[in-house]
Length: 367
Ligand code: GDD
Ligand code: MN
Image 1 (cartoon, rainbow, N blue to C red):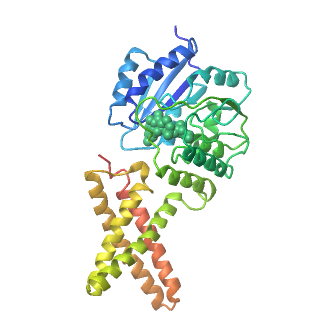
Image 2 (cartoon, rainbow, N blue to C red):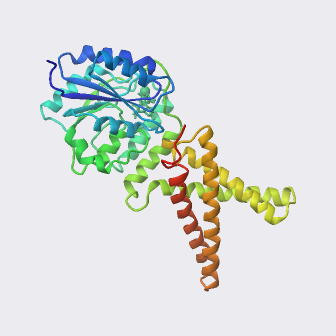
Image 3 (tube, helix red, strand yellow):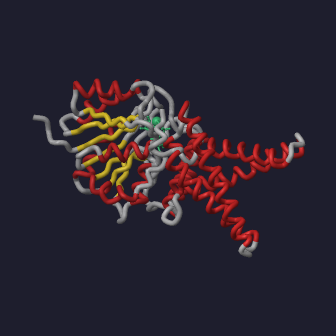
């Protein structure tokens, strides 16, 4: 008989084929007789990570695989992995061997002894280190850590860590409030927990990635901003709408630039120039929203084109509604400014609601 399940290790993966085998091997060594399992949450990696994990799971049933299709996101992957497990203690760690598995027994011991609700593997406390990070990345990480104080309890030295262990009740208490945006899942949990958590820290040294490359690009800064926004003003306005509106604001500049070029540069007549500028602004808005606002459901290939078509169709109706409402209000003697503002607002909400459903919604299944 195998020991009862005590610890689940949730590992989000995207293109980690070359690392998962070694990670499992490390866990076998370090966890010994503990009742553990490892849950990989793979976002349909093109390199076939999920298939390899399933092969390993046939030999060792402590290995499990959750495969998600048409979705991306580190935080949401971790949440779904944690929910897929029944263990009383749950750890989250990277697949690329950057997180030192040797501290797992110490983390588990702290939870067993009820000395903490959550144990964070930290790079900043005494004995920890960011390893061979360059100065730029280390500086950015510290800046982001400072910003995190706005939304989470301040006594955690490394709220940005991707390596931690918690008792299941911590997840149960916060799961319905999680933002699930971006890749700062620990910070999300800390900021979403109703009561104060007892946090313990175990230092470790961040190793260099074993194989493959980091999935974190410049846009994670944007996602981090969205997480902060969701945790502060998200109660009042959906952050996706904020992002959508922000992109729309930029689109106005694109519109004006194209319009000026077509009118003054090419000498086109106004209606033609205005139509061209509108079309260009729509393409711009679609492209940017696809990358920023709907990063987790980003369309590529053929669905990108279908998405563009539904986006342009929806926004054309939005533009009609905008002009219709503004004209109506203007004629019923509201000031021109308020009338225009109301038109823009109704148009924006329409565009947001309809494209959320038809351009990036379930119906627009990514390839
Ligand atoms: N399922 C899924 N979906 N997994 C993902 C995704 C995704 O969209 N993006 C990344 N991952 C997986 C990777 O395969 C890896 O196992 C883990 O998440 C971390 O990704 P890395 O690409 O290795 O991130 P990093 O090493 O640059 O960042 C690490 O350090 C940060 C602290 O600065 C991570 O641990 C972060 O969580 C941590 O905040
Ligand atoms: Mn990594």
